[in-house]
Length: 308
Image: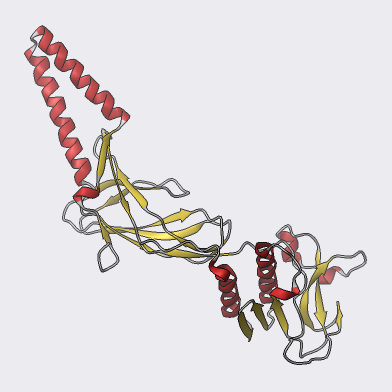
């Protein structure tokens, strides 16, 4: 990769092999050549050498179609574990001639052929699966071409420094967060269905008013849950690692992720406490993303190393 963050394909980085069509084409040329030599058929020899020349020219153009191609990679937005991580790959043609039938391999979606005119560039969305929280680094991507005639397949690999932050997969449901800070004493919150301030969800009980059902949670197949509210205007919601009794650390992180999302959906001011980390009380999307980032990178246990 160059200093400008762009990878340019050099001659020694390109691999090339005949395709199945190319193997059949080459076999046909050899059979024609042997038959023409056996029967001393000059027309057959001429046609066999002509086909061999076409094959050699096709091989050169296939290799040349990748030579000097400039590739840059950019990180995509953060996603939750299990969702597809999106990177943006830009192919740039820095020469006067056109490039044909360029494809990216290794992504979740089948790549469509890309045509680049002279001094043109094209951005392509490249999706990678996620299976763990933390930073997902874009591994080597494969660029291939079979232009012209699909007789040969030329390919190369490009490596970048792009990454996507993968948030933990939220639990389906989580217990209500702690409503009193451990540092300052506040009166206990008066919980109920008709009070003012949201303090968390609980499971639906027969006889609960349908006005306080969390329909968004029901639409996400989390079952029937009821929003709880407290009447104390000084209630501060804390999302606390020690308040959960789940022995599995990853399950605890999933529960904390659910609490963060629920608190943000209710427009609450909330803080978060993890072992060795404390995020003060605040509200809004920035606070939610700050907490989710800390949960994603907590302990660095699920973070893949950056490529060298």
